[in-house]
Image (tube, rainbow, N blue to C red; front, side, top):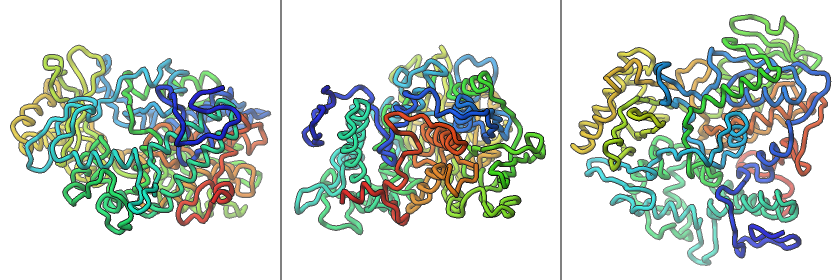
Length: 634
């Protein structure tokens, strides 16, 4: 068999491969390079099977809780799923200002869906009959004509990804693209110091294909190459922020003069400022300059910033479909039931108590529990980060081990705000009009989304993170009151009309709510204010990867002395938080742990399951853990 340049019985050579890749080649994510979640799920009817219909509770009806609940029902469990609010979906939140709306939706949570979310693609096909690659592209900068407004310079128009970047941004674009495609090389030797992120991605794709083709030895070879390349990045930048990484690579601050500058032009302070506006094409990276540099490199390697898609029907439909399937297959869903107490018992089961309803399940314990919320909700809404909560103190076993509880409390869940406006479809009469804007002002970034209505569309008048989100929050609480909505919208429109010149000021008139109806045609959300959320998603500062390692792999305690019967899920415990794929991966991990802990059979593909993933594949700079296979290769 020959494909991807792989032939049975030959040793692959990265530099000599001539790949014939499908449109979206399958790959693992870089922190779990030896396991392909989508391939495993494709080849198993469920995560496993248990006997005796054990009773299991799942806490949280976001994407992780719904998925874990459905997979556990299919594995033979009786499942009660508790949601703290009256709405399912969590941060899959597609709002409509009126029941009379036909297609337009406000995606107040997840709104961009890259094709490398292979698990998401599978659930979309199963539940909604939709395929990711068939969905329309999200209107990112460069996908559509984009205003670039920087400082007091004349606004420029970027025609698209295949057009030259606006004046002043060419050096930044060329340098970043060179880093992604070519990595970092030594001036003296010409050898590569850091493997290009896109090359690591290609290696992961080759590994995935080899494993699918049954070429186990070759797959292991490629996976080792990916491990070694990523470990070098971890060793070099584990405690480095995004802005520090940029200065180190492009301005030679604090790094060896032996590094060649990608793109061959040293960046100035002004260039770094331009990158803060442009980011890696999506804008708004200035506020996350304090975040870990590795967080951004992961996005590129995992393909999460490429060819992002828009969900025509609203992503919340997936949550509704999962909930309907869960109940149809025997699960029980309880809304408005916040769980505040999780108490392990001497027999290894777990009692739950609701903030409003008291003891759940008539006081009888559940045999296992999956906690699928944000880490902030785990800390502030439940007792799992108490080292010895009631009951646990008596049996000497906390819900979470101290190192995991510490990680839950320490990882950063960031604030994020959105202002969504239903507008007139102004490009219907003027197809050449810009539809996206990037700026260093308070607005930051504007997107216009077309859901197929004849005369109306949706505009995100602002989408901000961290310090910029706090700045916007100061304008108004972003609540449902008309006056506050109007204040937020008028403030953003005022910035566009007074700070960016007459062309942008005239264009901004297209962004007013239809009929000036701020009640029906405007929605604002501050995720840090949302009950039982307390933030948008995890974004790690430098040095927090060891915490993520503890959180992500905590499920592997199943069946060991550390097993408390409670397993964590949710995108906030995955390295790729903020993406649906992260929520799905952790849901499958937790469901698998439940089956394994209850003595059931975990289904495998090619001998693999989440229980076989090497938790010590990498040394995350302070974890003191490194997989034997990687260590042996050095």
